[in-house]
Image (tube, rainbow, N blue to C red; front, side, top):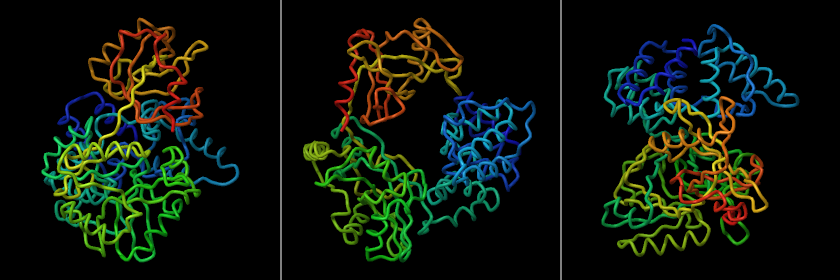
Length: 500
């Protein structure tokens, strides 16, 4: 199958809002794909690459060669080229990588270039990511969706599930199970604005309030002295976290899977800013990151994910010392949860996760059994520019560039966001920013800095990308402030005050 076929399917997926139509498009593609390419097709259209790191970022793809007139490369040929690029290292590797990237993209049509660039940079937004893909696999293979979803719990990559379903049906899918050494999809939490709302959402008689640390999610697998550490995106990083490896080696279980966080602490045990943890865990210098576990998924090879959470925690507490576990509180009244929330936030942690003690571990799902609560920070910023939308936002102005007011004059850019925008908001801002337009280069529309927008964010971190030296973490739009002028927007100094 040529990459062009996948790019066309991706465009068709982005053009429809119908989940059923998306499923049908994917099922048709999977059903007509050669088996040796099914895994790649499912992986690409789920928005990921088999190569977790290619060494290529958005800067390296900002100036592409002229596109080919006709498609020529198959999925296997594209994968081989990316594998070669990802494997480059040593002196002169940057130049070789640039040359190989240019050669690859020169062989692609403009549609293929756009799709592959989005895939490499994590920008595939077609509404066809994992959940719809699993439905499509079931449709293409003629097997129950439940069987596909169960198998996917135990196989973080989607591709192997697609291959099993299409070659062996339900029987092959039933063979997927928790296996020490193979990462499973992490359980995710829904959100609530405050502890009271979170308790109500859980609907449980007793709620457990767990500390939400501001670190990186880790899933740790131990088989004897061999320890593997996987991130939330399922990248294996044990070489970067020697302290975590040693701590798990010392635990009295030979076949073990733990779920937790790794973060860097200061001399008195307080959490350092997330950026320091992210930096430490992105290279071999991660020896400063410490583990804190909040769940156990397997012990002595026995899968525990179907057990109630309370039973899993009992096993966790018996095996893992208190100093390597997150602090949690069993609360029967919201007031106790609120006090716990206030205390952990004051100590520098990110918030809490409210948990139903009777719930199993729902791998790969964002369900009602975990509800996260974090303090919401807001700023009033000014829109400096806006980008043309893609996918289902094509024809509208979408991603906004955010600026803080400089007391000495002008505005300083802090980052971008497209999160939190409703369809109504997109229509409104498209009209509004056309009124404020200064220039349009076909990608970015520069506007007069007049429109104030209220932004929610989780934190402020250092950044060399933006001129203010800081960037917002998880910025999302709450509303446009037509009652405020740009002169009333928050200053760069007030933004920096949020930086820990």
